[in-house]
Structure formats: C-alpha cells, structure tokens
Amino acid sequence: MRQNDEKKIEIPIEKTLGLVRVKNIIENFGISSQGVYYHIRRGALTVYKSGYHTFLDPAEFAKINKWSRKYTKKNGVFIYDDKNLSVTTICKKLDMDRQKIYFLIRSDQLIAKKIGGCIVINVDDLIQCKPIRDLTHTLLLQVANDEYIDSCCERLGSDDKKEVSAI
Image (cartoon, rainbow, N blue to C red; front, side, top):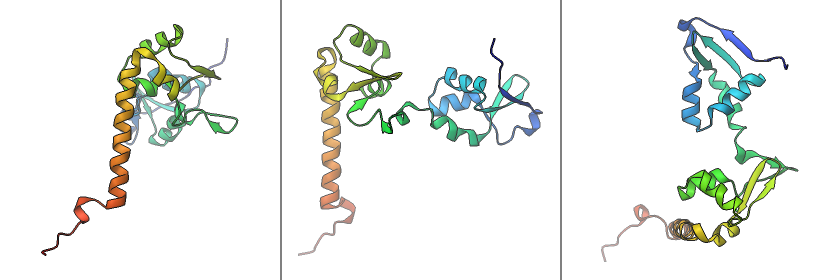
C-alpha cells in the first residue's frame, strides 16, 4: 500500500479569508474534480481544511493551469496547435458530445493518432469525416469570415477612426 503524501493543514473557519474552496476552482477553471483531487492526493497542492470544507491558496491556481492538456509537450514541441486538436477542443467548438467523437474514432470514421496519453485529431481528418462534415464546414467558414473581417479592420481602420469630410 502506498503512503499518502497529502499536505493537509487544519485551520479555524475565521482564518479562511483569502482561500478558495475546491468547488469554486472546479467551476471557474472548467477542470474535473478528479484532476484536482488527484493532485491533492499526490501532494502537489497544499490543502486547508475547515470542518468539511476544503480550501486552496489562490497562489495554487498557477499550478492548476499547467496541468491543462493544451500545454502538453513531446520532445519540446507542443502536441496541440492550430492543425492538431484535442477531443475536448473539438467538442467545445462543434458543440458535440465527447462520446460521439470517441464513437467516430472507434468506428474508423474519424482518424486520430495517439501521442503518449493524448489523442490528437488533425483538422484535415476532421473535415473528411462524413458524419460531422457539415458542422466542421460551417465552423471553418465562421473562423475564415472572422479572420477576414479582422484583416479588413486592420487594413482600413475601424469605423470610429474615419473622419467625414464636408465637401
């Protein structure tokens, strides 16, 4: 049996000012409770307990950010970039259920590669997937239109800066 290295400090409820409950961290950062409690059990986070409530120091937020998959590197190169997306990113962008994406991968309708523990889906493979082709096409059109509008605003300037002549 492995020894638990959890860093736990008992404090009275009056001294919890400046500390944040784990529940709020989970809601604000959009990470799973399993991920937070895993790192608490590992001893990577210092936990402050007051009765049944569990608190973390706000300085620990920076540590939570580094566990995000978008910062994952392999041989010094980021795994996820503009061309290679994670399943979570695709689900958020296309407003789909994760299980549908995993089903498409298992049924060989969507090509994905596994790098370490990360599932990586290329944008080109996502476009070629028949069941979600329409969703990806509309999403790419939106992104292209937004980029075109931004480039026009940079070249021509925004409407607020234009002066109207009286001639």
